[in-house]
Every structure is written in structure tokens, then in C-alpha cells.
Image 1 (tube, rainbow, N blue to C red):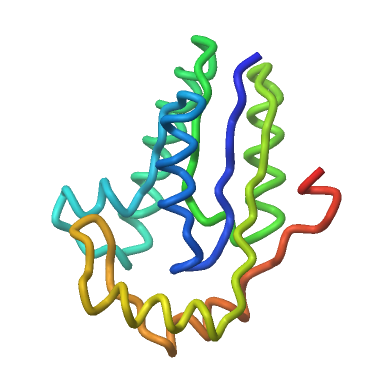
Image 2: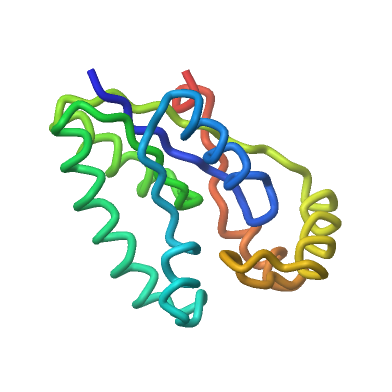
Length: 148
């Protein structure tokens, strides 16, 4: 049975590092919007473009799962609703789902992002402390039943 892996966390929590490690260990197809948006040279904060990339990535993920391949989605998955919807869709495809939640304190995230912004990798976008604080208020932490 193929597995859909969801990487959940705020910017700076280590999602990309974990996803890249899992991609090799499993192996699995890794899909992350930031890399695609950066390669297309578009604004990483353009929500319409991000949504379009995620829809395209989901089409590819469904095909890979249907072929029996594991897939990693590194989308952040900030809300329970988003996580529930993608899990239900994966189940309809006959895939299991595993959620990895990177729970990093806000102050640690801020420190990490200062360092990351100073030497910004080409496939990421800068994140300021004010943005992070706003997003942290919107973020819905996964419950224990989601992590089981």
C-alpha cells in the first residue's frame, strides 16, 4: 500500500530538511510548492499561484500513489480541515497517510529564520518575524489522534 506523507509545520521548522531525508530513506516522490514557485521565478506569497502549484502537485501525487509509489507533500498543512481533506482523498486512492508534525517554539523559529534569511537558499523565500507571528496565530496544531 502506498503512503502519502504530510509534512506539517510553520516556516523554519525543518520541513524541507525532513522531507529531503524521507525522500531518500523511503524512497518517495517529494513535492514542495516553494521549490516550484522559485524555479518559475514567481512571488512565493502569491496565494493564487501557490494554490495552482499545489493542485498540480496533487494531480501528480495521485498518479504516483495510484502507481504504488510513496509521496511526500511538504505543504505545511496549517489547518485540520486541510489535513482531513487530503487524508480522505488519499484513502479513496487506497493509500495510507502519515503526518509528521514539526513542533518548534516560536522563538526558536524566529532565530532559525533570521539565519535562513541571511543566507537564503534559492528554493525558499524570506520570512520576517511579523509574518511568522501572524501565521502562528492561524496555525492549528495537529491533535494526538492525527499523529497516531
